[in-house]
Length: 418
Ligand code: SF4
Image (cartoon, rainbow, N blue to C red; front, side, top):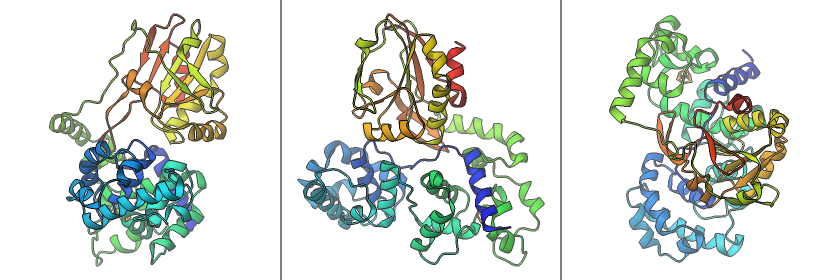
């Protein structure tokens, strides 16, 4: 197998089966993200998500954090690893952000790494998540998984980063970082990789050279054995397409167990057809103010989506783009809403030639008014975020439909068929 075929196989698998992959850190703006990523060095995302809500509430921006003492911040983060150093880094980072960058998180790696507490990995995470740059952050999971798969032959994270960037198509680099992290966290574990449930065995060098060799550590007798012993819980979490596992009764059992034990109920908007649509106003990707009061007499498709440039949000936007002329004929005005800013919206709209406005709801006032912020679950993780929801508002400003089961790939058609 050539290196090219190996990359293609792995990327195609993830593209098809894990189309959306995001950081597991909770944040709602760039400042919160950089703080969370600094804190996450050599610590689990779960732990960081436990300490950040109070920290973000009391220190919501660089001004507040810069004015704090590191001793005070220490008390907020004492349960994470290296709290002393991290408290100092956070306060110093906020000060430098104000002094040298006018309070704006820089977008270039060489500027980001000047900030206290920001190493190359953190800088790459921030550049890719906030600025949509094709930057590959290499943490312990990415380093291990890509070496095992044979995507890289690296002795250092920098070598790993350089080799991955060379071979992964630019549009997938940022997402590939999350794919490899999640795979390392849930399947390709450091001490005992779960090759028996792994869907990547076909392309994995470690599997071919070590696992199917009976004398090697973690060895299994044959590939057949491996494929008939799927781990149902992880299979469910990772949406793995190991054929026998998908159809097995274990899936049902796991789903029930999951629901029963976690009692998880995804949030859904409280607005319903017949309700008056909450008024809104925000700037779009071109800086134009869009207000609901200017839309009277029009039918409005107001669709809320989690994030620009992510695979499912791109499918949804492109579907609305492709049906836009038919929607326009029916007097529909299409408006997308997310918490991304004007700049990010503009990049997204330009990249995919979107013919409609994307509202920059950075203070989340529209998101909250339409009650689409809440708890959701993805890849086994439960977290708060924007729930993908579309409201159809009639010419009189009344909600006529609420679509919560959005079919992203064909959302335009889904609306036209209402
Ligand atoms: S086959 Fe095993 S070693 Fe290879 S990626 Fe999967 S879990 Fe990791």
